[in-house]
Length: 165
Image (cartoon, rainbow, N blue to C red; front, side, top):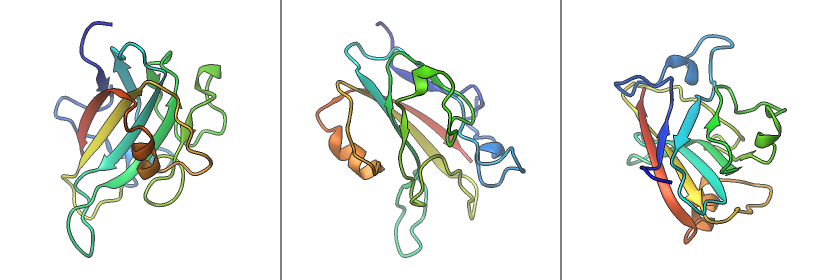
């Protein structure tokens, strides 16, 4: 596959702005939705993909800036190239191609996407998609920390998308 491994979202505008409906500040049913994501040029030899989304400007009340985990997704088959809007939290994943995908715990200790409710705007959200040379088994409790530990030595490529809210 030629070209750069890329991660994009049709909902994030040219200025990189994350729309309100993907945060805890949205309205009703248009709130806390996971954004649609698409990726291109997956590295050859990829057996699975994993996604970590973090607020990289999250302040620690007792200290420095510490990234806040918003979403962890593992076991994404390399045969698919997108996650639709609102994918997170759906009991029934649309189509068999999404059946084996698992969502891990965010920093609120619950599985799935949890959009931020920020004390101030201007935070950057890093969406990082990892192309892996193997499927990762994390047991029942999937977390960012366990994922990052387990994928060491298995990363074929990384695609990063930064959005601001």
